[in-house]
Length: 141
Image 1 (spheres, rainbow, N blue to C red):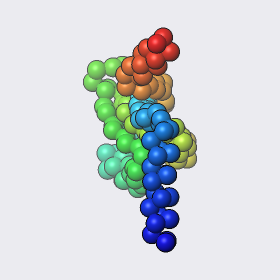
Image 2: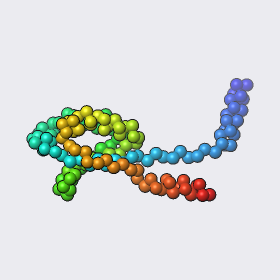
Image 3: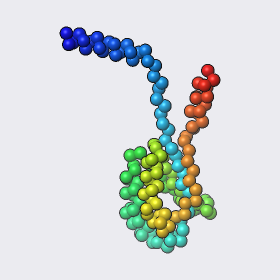
Image 4: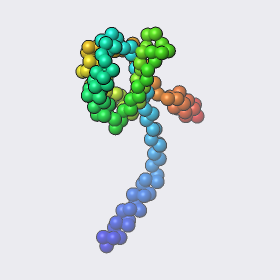
């Protein structure tokens, strides 16, 4: 009797699920953030050994703390730009994790000494216009 009830319950559940239409979940695109920086005299006056030590001791652990949802790539640009010596290219799955990264960096000498002046922060999502175009098409039909 129990097995018959389970079969009936399963059949009813399947029928109910078939009648409800579910919208496919929109995949959340990651945020891409470009942090433009300029190294100042305090950073440049450190020896290369001191800079490497600071980075390994203070910055790498922060990157590791957020590494499950945030990736950080570092770039030099002083050879090509007078006002921007370096930039970070950050990809974050959500803004809370990005905020954690920045807050933790703000507690270091990167911001506090400061070793770098943050010139600008630019955020976007790759091809986000495509999502709007699809939404726009759906609204028109």
